[in-house]
Length: 282
Image (tube, rainbow, N blue to C red; front, side, top):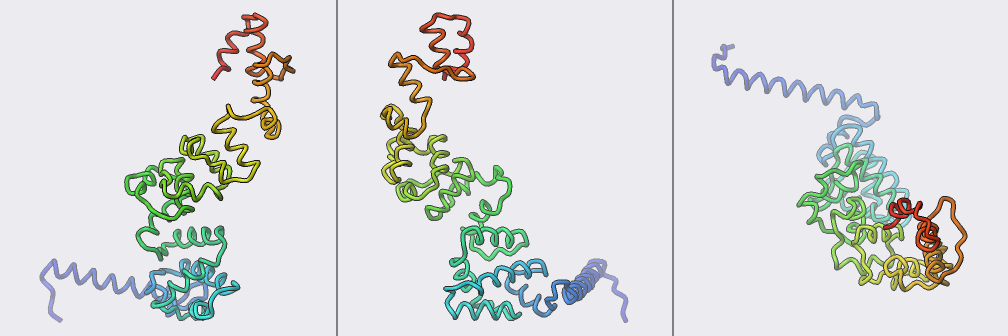
């Protein structure tokens, strides 16, 4: 054997030998995986972007739930079953997974997305990566409200989630607003009103049932709320205001509220309550 005198070539050769050693050691570890998945099958999954036994187990758990679902087309079910048996088809598997996800509940889809994301399985396109940054984040940071995130597009449901998760930093596109007003959770609409993202001119009450319609109208245009409507809503502050303005005798609250203090200072002339009233006034 000739001695290698070129130091650069010697270093490169040493690195190649070390890479080969690490590859063999990794293959041995995978072959002895506690998951029971053979090293041969793990290599097949690696070709699909699923690296390591933990990631494979996560994918298999998702596929198992999909295969058990009613309504999955038999062609896709066969692809998923074959993958569960250790023969994932890189040409058709992702399409079958997409079909399976469409039959799962929203909570199950979110759970699987977070599990896949945490194990490094990113079977999604660039737009999907942006969405998963929000879906899979456990603590929303400034990076989620950067310039690129503001340009994220998606359907009405995703847009509503994005604005709720980022407290309005990512706005709802105007083209989606009318459509989501009919089905968005009332608590989310409450948040939008609090942030000024939903205004009276959006007339959200027109798309809701009677009670929710009354509630939303009272929040956005309270001056149009009658005494009877306030009673139906159990809106005591409104009823006490109406009673005060009408000169009725109010039953005192414990502790004193705004109307009790106004009565003491303005009508009874008790100036000792002036500081308390000043702190209570909007």
